[in-house]
Image (tube, one colour):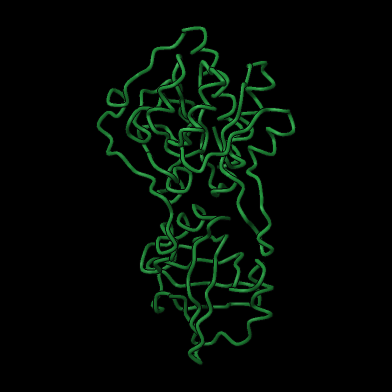
Length: 312
């Protein structure tokens, strides 16, 4: 059970490791792109390639879906990047239903664990498999594997690392469950004394940069949202024009200064600096509304005079 690209390697690993995958559940086809062409999920496209039957329910409690799912007589269900399941679904197989989550649970429960780990400046994260129960991301832990977060990682690169690592964890977990060679550990026993951090869904309002923060905080915020959905801000020109901007790549330069926070500084024709509380953020790539993403040097050539401008 899964939908986006993140779920495909896990399904592929199960198929290629000779598990008998009896079927795939994924999201219904949706209109996408400028032409609003009906588009299948990444998981469905792979399932079709290898000849697996597919169910695409709108409603996970629909009687027809429940009947069709039960007819597959699955012993085990695997969930990777899907929706919250009702009990009638996750309780159906004799061996249970387990989920792959892109964090070291119980830390970063929620829809956006990769993003929030980077935003919070974590240096380590990982993936967890756990049995589903009534509450989201709270079931007993089966397996975990950690991974270092490099200074160069953003949400895109970390997503890809965890996608590949998670596929191996899914295979190992499925084998252990089938062989009855695993002891689930309740999450309450793993939390320790560290405060729990959450990973709620990313809203449009959340993605706006607050320039009244430390430079390292802003830098981590940008990389935690890059390349998607992207950190946003507004360029306010001296003539009153406001240009919405997405920022994808930054560097923090610690330095004392007396400039107004959010003010723009261009020491040469290719470097774009923004004043923060404790230094400058150098913006390396960005995208203004209606245009393609570009390096700052290209942006500066096309934007015109930025004297007395600021980001807010």
